[in-house]
Image (cartoon, rainbow, N blue to C red; front, side, top):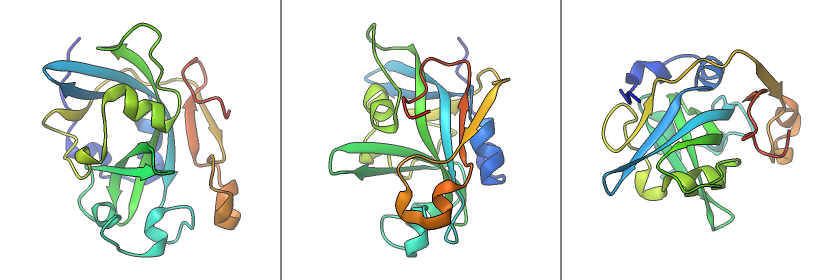
Length: 183
């Protein structure tokens, strides 16, 4: 399997376009010389400071600064004090949350990547990988196969965001068994 990094310009587009385009691409994290690879099967778009579900809606902070930087970088944060979540920055305070991957390579049998916390655990991603360029190095996006049947729904777990909680900004591969259980 060829694992050539996608250029940073891949993420330098409209956030919804990127959220859909990430489906089917591969997320690769080389850990101790072993490539852990997952095929992205579920994403959520967070559109920037005006989107009340987006972290950047609270303003520029040390935590969200990466979201205002150049597109194509990782934004990794800790939720509930125990689960890491990874986003692909699209710029101007916007990013795409990676919600689920299908294990492809470098994993034990039965490994699961359905859900943002399981995804980062599966690939060995922590806050140590925050603000990394995703077009080089040990953590990167690689070309996969385009998803032909994309499902759309409201995002998960953002009820606090008022009308933004109902926006259809979650995208998933309708044919994948690895999408999180909150379909």
